[in-house]
Length: 119
Image (cartoon, rainbow, N blue to C red):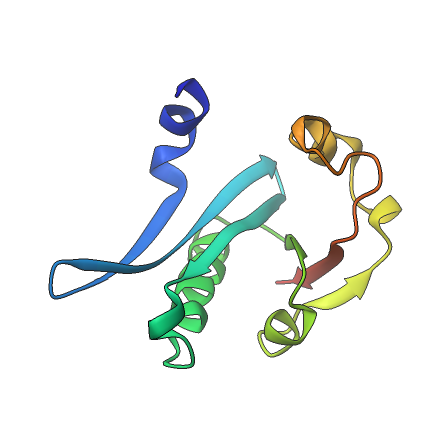
């Protein structure tokens, strides 16, 4: 619960008619770096551009904050490529990024793709 409350203000929620259809978060990692995380859209609402609107909101906020780069760890690199992200080796990401990864059941054998968007 503590982690949820610490991250609550990071989240964008897409709501329609009182129903939550999608969510994502922009988590600031460092003075010039943030992560787009937890992109999720209800399955029945897929392919309607909701995920794209949520990711774009994160990109817009990162620009407003003067951040230089945004990264993501994803199983859907094609989706993020449409938004200008490019694949990178995970070793290019700062060590601070891996703080959350240590809690993951897949650590240290992560099979997600690391991607970066230079702003």
